[in-house]
Length: 282
Image (cartoon, rainbow, N blue to C red; front, side, top):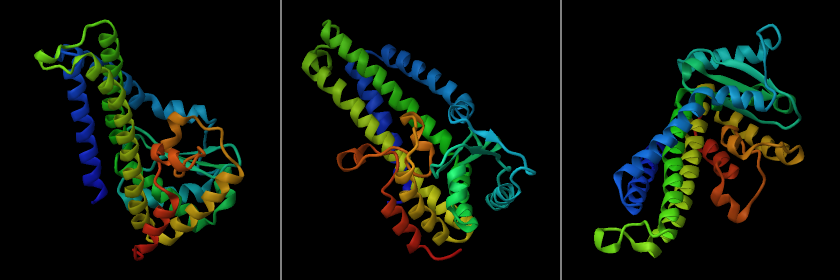
C-alpha cells in the first residue's frame, strides 16, 4: 500500500477512536472539550516547536560564511524541491544525526550534528539533507501535528472515561454506552491503539521522506550508505535525546529492540536501506 494512502487511513483510524471515546464518556460536549484542549496544546507546539527543539539541543544557526559547503548543499536541494531555503543549524556533539523542523516550508530549518559532518562524505551528507528537505517539502510537521492532536484528544478522553467509570458517571448500557467495565476496557485500549497509530504515521512519513530525498539528490545509494553509517555511529556515540523529539531525527536516537520496535517512531533501518537500493538513480 502506498505510504500516502496509509497515512490517510491511519489518520482516519485516529478520528474513529476519537468518536468512539466521545460516545463512551456519554456526550458530545465532553468530546468537544477534550478536543479543544488537545488542539490548543498542539497549536502551541505547532507554532513554537521549532524554537523549543533547537534550543533544547543547543543548536547554533550558522551563516553561509561559517559553513559554505553545508549552505550550498541546502540551497541546491531547496531549489530542486521548489521550497524556500531553510535556515541552517549545527548541533554540538559526536552523535551523527540530523533533523528538520518548522511549521511549513516558508519557516523550515535543517539541523545537523558536528558528528554527522565528520562521519559522512559530502555525497552522503547531501543524501541526508535531501531526506530532511523531503520532510519540509511534504509538510510532515503539519501531518504529525494533526496526528498528535487526535491522539492527545483520545488520551484526554480516556482519562475522563476512567474517572467517570470509577465514580459511576459513565453511560449505562441501555443508553448506548458500554457500562462501567466496557468503559474501563475502552479507556485502556484506545490510548494504546492511538499511540501505535501515531507511531505508524511517523514511520510512513519516514519512508516517504526517504523516497523524496532520493529523488531530490538523484542518488538513492548516497542516502542508503549514510543510513548504514548512522546505524553504527549512533550506537558508538548515543545521544541523550528526549523521547518527545525523537521522531524528528533521521535515525532514532533512542535505543531498544524486539518488542520496543512496535513503539518505534522510525521504520527498521534495514528495510529503509533495502527500499532505497531498489530504487533506480534519478
